[in-house]
Length: 177
Image 1 (cartoon, rainbow, N blue to C red):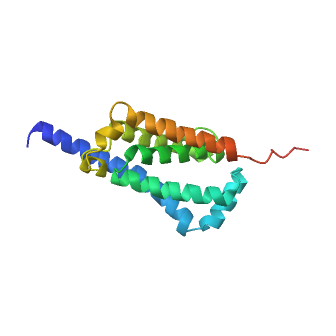
Image 2 (image 1 turned 180 degrees about the vertical axis):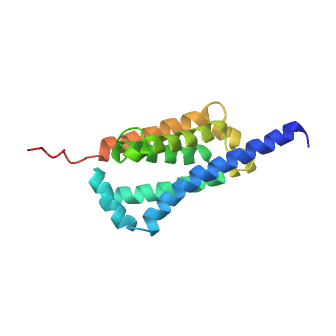
Image 3 (image 1 turned 180 degrees about the horizontal axis):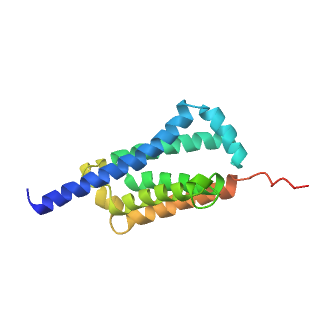
């Protein structure tokens, strides 16, 4: 095997692992909202407490976006759209739930930032040779000429910000006596 073949195989393996980690994590978040814990009803109540109203609409939207975008990333199918879904979810999470300091142990936004940039990087590079996009011959059409960077940035950040602008209505802080 030539060194360029080994390098290409390593590159494809690394991208596959990154897609499975990012997409699998996102999928499991959505699965949890749908089938475990408090399910949609519990998620809806939590979202209401974060100011995302109506909570039930956003519970369904988040759960379906997380499962769908997670599966797209794992498969490497329509990769920029899967990345946009993950980025949009992370934009909303950073503003509503992870508003503390930087570090996660203080309810900070480091975790959502890392996942968002991981998805953005995967989309920018492309899903690799071990992906549905590659098998269908659409990888270059989706990620070439900056599309892999622009699609998730514009769509993911745009939908996340628009969602917050339209639906995020947190309760005013309680006045101290």
